[in-house]
Length: 99
Image (cartoon, rainbow, N blue to C red; front, side):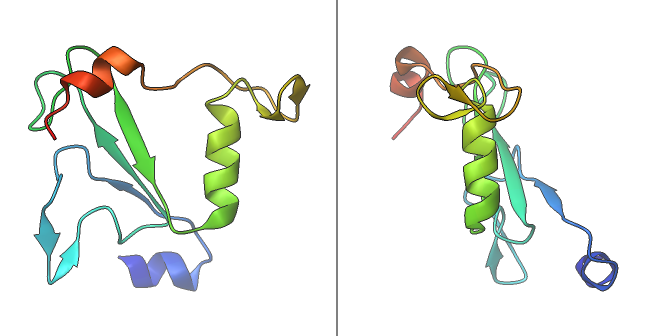
């Protein structure tokens, strides 16, 4: 499937929401697509107290874009380059996650 995406110049978003620490054919889940999503919802295998999640990527352009989206669309305070939202994992949720 990844070969088809690469052939057609498509980005792959990997659903790794319940794959924390898992491997597939010797590769860690969350490293196969251009970007991967992990869920910390309480009912998941790595759950916080409430809603939460994370994305991972090795691509600097995607890391910058998604980082900007989650912070009100701004790279620099009060300079909004796109329409964003507040979607940061709060301290309480992070503290509840197992270490």
